[in-house]
Image 1 (spheres, helix red, strand yellow):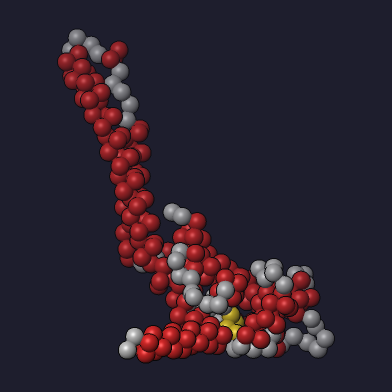
Image 2: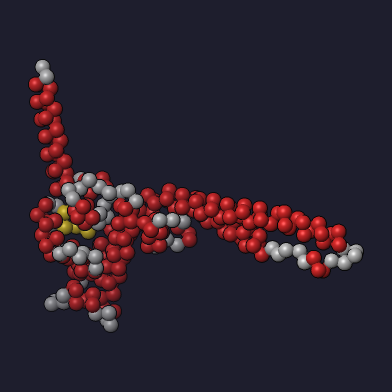
Length: 253
């Protein structure tokens, strides 16, 4: 499986009970193929030195059968293993939309937990300092929320890399808007100035949670495109296209 699919599977937080039925069946088939291949590999050649005058015909027949069949059995077992691996990858690939939907709900819940944890900080407590204070449990909820957001951000990125990128202003905006909603171009630009170009550690979502005009929320490509700035650009493009088409039609009369 490719890196993006492996990332989604490993970081989505799925238990065995969460696996789709197609994935369960593919994994069961893979386990059966692996067991069969192990049995074939464990087979050993017939020991001709163990033959006696009474067993020579039987031992000889067994030796011939092993020499004739074992190589073919190994080859077929290898084909079954390759088939099983392909079924597993296909099953997981088909499950990505459902996994993404599940992760979106968990991500949005963690965003709410982060806002609640930040509002509960005592007077004068800096969010970044609270995150860094690992020796106290007072801010565990804050750190847990940030950990979930960071884990699922990687899932959202992997989904995008698998072909789910939006047409959203620029590559930087597209990446940011996968898990953030900006209510204006100014809000996005102010946020980018705040975080610089790193934007991959816990401070990324701390900054987002306190930034004006920014909301932490999982976004699919359609939702990204519907955000204020990219939507306004699309309207302008559509208007230009319509104007050009009208002028072209007028000129052709």
